[in-house]
Image (cartoon, rainbow, N blue to C red):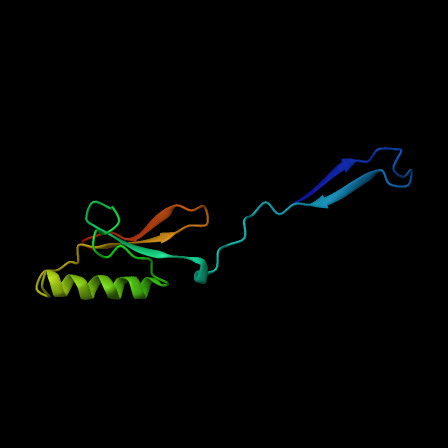
Length: 99
């Protein structure tokens, strides 16, 4: 987006307006800047698997391994969810527990 505003006549008589460019979009975070965490069935950080992961695959693999080891492979669906960090510092749910 470009914005033009009047320039003071004392600056330069040949310049009537100065144009500046403003980037109104935040730069998107790259995947390497994202963190993933596991949550329990209430959506709180998982009490045992309370760690940050570099990728969705790493987080989900850890969740599945832990679930099958502690709950049993016969119990599906996995009662653990996955959240991803956002550029604003919040968390967004990618996979709800039990899905």
